[in-house]
Image 1 (cartoon, rainbow, N blue to C red):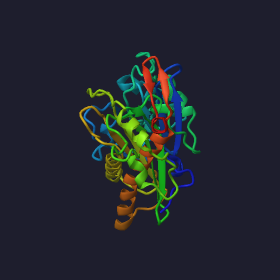
Image 2 (image 1 turned 90 degrees about the horizontal axis):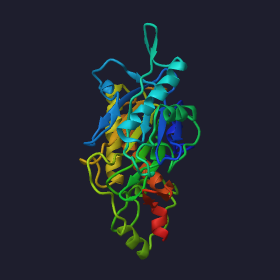
Image 3 (image 1 turned 60 degrees about the vertical axis):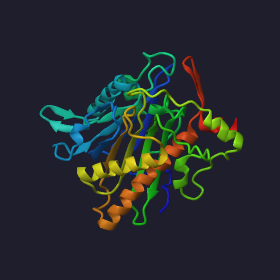
Length: 333
């Protein structure tokens, strides 16, 4: 196995990713655009305080099989409005579920809590932000850190953000993940000061800073966010080019949660709304049992690695609401 050429969600052919930020605000939106014709999708919601849209539609017993995009956004429940902008762009492009008179774009989404972190509670994503993220979507390298839905993210008292990673399996199948790390829990091993997720990297994938005794002391002094219902949430999209049905995509999403549990502690709490989406573009054939096993195992790994990339790419931010320090800056202080 090896990482894809971009080590990103866009290593799954046909997937595009775009980010947009809220002007003057510490928030934003990330959109994952499916290939023409959509992608089969599933979802697994494990956090107790989720903010979601259209997730019931992804239940394997329900009718619609494919989605046209997935939206991850800041702004808590207000940020769900960003999905409207993506829906309008897709409608204009003629993409969606065909109905008499037109199409209905199928766009599930979920949000993280970042309200007020930029200093103003009312600066949050809306339909304009979602449309801007859609317009910015490309199949190239994916920006990480303080971008899109990760702009205002915080994890365990450190600056969070967007991260991504991919794996090419021995049979050529690709599985990749994009995460928005905004957790009550921490990605840092308190004994060593190292990021938990870096342990799962390919040789040479990560170049984390060395953690000295002073760095470990500085990390232990970081004050995590005050636990309160609904003030966190880590989101992820796990995608593959394999052929899966909705149940298979749901299982892919479930394996993604295993990846979160390796990289963050704790997860899936009463304070978090942790949600993972699974996507399958189906450009490769149906996997046999051994291939399915390898795919699911790699799905957990790419999520773990994506969390580490998010925390390493995050940058310190100071706003009227306070200073949110990045892992690299705390370790090197």
